[in-house]
Image (cartoon, rainbow, N blue to C red; front, side, top):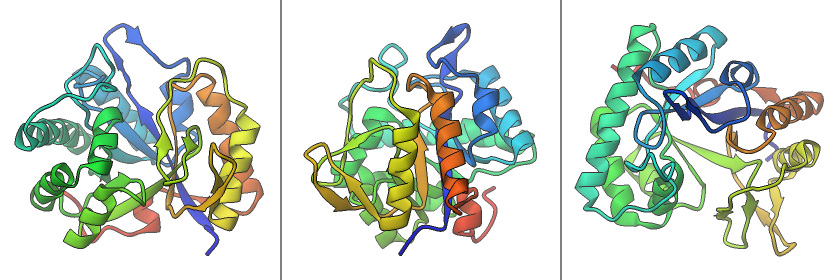
Length: 264
């Protein structure tokens, strides 16, 4: 079925003190999205930035999510770190708790949890780690959405356990034949209009063209782009304009799939 209402999510607050990675201003990006994945200090972010980003999200009516990653500031959370599942999940709990308290401070609640970078990709194929993660989510944030790919172990395990799920389409990443995103580091700027047209096609047809030139099915409730992708502000504007221009409504995940209760 065509997607007529969709969430746009973006990774936000991905800086540390005076260090900045994105070439876009979070305040400008926040005006164009409906859900924010906010770094919680392990791959990027610090308490002051977490506070400022949550405040900005509440002012813009954007759904607040935590973006927990591996403890890897130097590698921006894009390096897989070996460790027991319990150790990795405890790091996730720590990050959830920190971001959730800033949300509480500003009168908001935690809409979702989206693992970052290498942790997201590891959970997607590691059923044991996904089960440990979802088991904890059922206790600490049972009504928070888990953002993940529709083909991932994370999605399957969460659905089986009754954890709310939001499936993602990646506007600024390529796909392979399995339906998984191809993890690359972009050196050159991407064409914002081409990405926007690709997202609209996915909404209208449920299809995406792979790097091999094949069309595959894709199911999603949210479209993701990354703030650290070069030209992310232009991508956000093109994406939003194209969706609205084709009659596709943009809304936070909690308006698309209502949460049963507010997370405390």
